[in-house]
Image 1 (cartoon, rainbow, N blue to C red):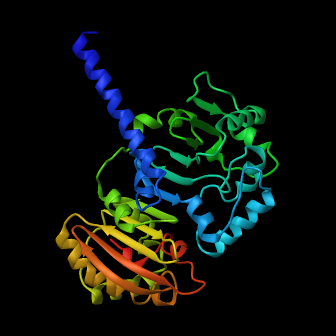
Image 2: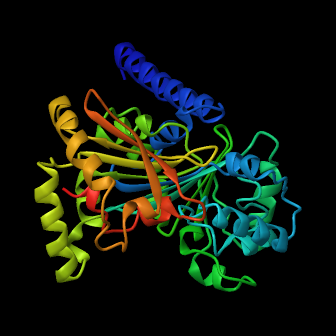
Image 3: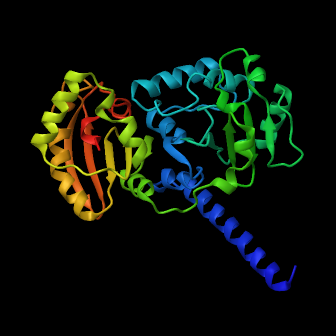
Length: 350
């Protein structure tokens, strides 16, 4: 290899390392950038991103747990998180007591979790706090029966059969695990081959509509984000019964024109508020949809039942550049995040 090609290679490697370092620094911060930073680690093929800031949820609930906490303590924590609608985005809920006991990590100890689902595969990307003993984690994986890789950052292969031998249910998304000690990440997948490629497949700092929506959603304890194609499928009125679809058509006609959504995010924020962010192709579309979608968001909720105002009070609706945000103040006891991440959602129609 010529000296020039060596130089190009060294520079490229240095740039990748620098980007990874920036992502990790942002993820360790205590601000609105955490979900945005985690987004960069997800595969480019991801269509739905499900985020939980476990450290933030524990702080919000005033809970202190550790890797020595009992499965019962973890279950109690998750029940409290559920009651506040802060646990619906995790891939680990049913697995949590078992993996706490068998593997020594769970929502009790994780810093954060991003469940990235797409057409090519899925990853559960988990942030490990500074205090977490990664050496002990490796030992727990060996003891549990995972096949240790020759490289420190290789894939630990367990398989579904191994997980089924544990004392309780465990999601197949933990059948293969990768430990990234440098960046304090633990990544799981049901596909070891897909997991092995995850650094090559990562989004990086792609500035697309999903990234715009996530940034506009603000600080998030629990959140979901969708690509345009996914939101237009997952939250569409097409799954509602015929009478509800007819009612939705009438409401849409009365509300005015709506444009296709290019990226969508909804976040449960510290303190209990919820914010919805929709990114569009143009600023003009965002401004136009501010009127029509705010009318829809404050009216009947066909397919969901009742009215949206049974669930929340609609606050500020703001169009800023290509992004429209809606501030929602949940009614006591309402599960706004859970309801509005399961279709149909009329005001998120395409």
